[in-house]
Length: 147
Image (cartoon, rainbow, N blue to C red; front, side, top):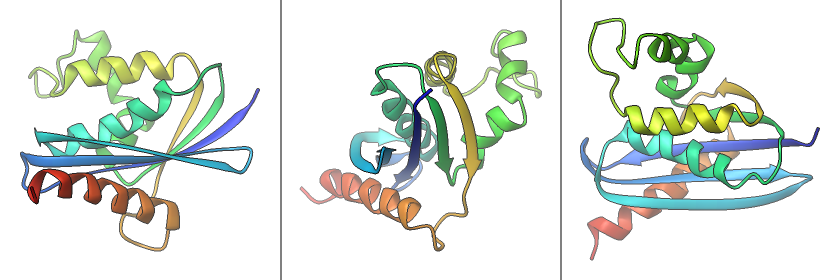
């Protein structure tokens, strides 16, 4: 099975506010950067979108390592929250509807097509790819805040 590494980050200016996301896909030493933005969104939506959009580019079943500085994204899978949400009809442990349910559903469906491992990285530290994703995401925000 082919292996791919994905780094992702999302950012927001204000929360909610203009947001951007950036992802870097690395396959056989080839790097591809993708990005996007929304005029009015949240940081968590941008973090999720970065992962979703990267996974959507994969054309066949892969072994995927996703590196993110978002505890929200990583913990949902690594601490198995998402499986509880699904089992409980998208109600969280506080008996409230899960926020961003539609994006979570899309992300879950995409992860089922691959062997996905989520790895937490420390944000704004010495990880060059995470820092690059942050830079890409912030450039996307700039498009909406400086017209």
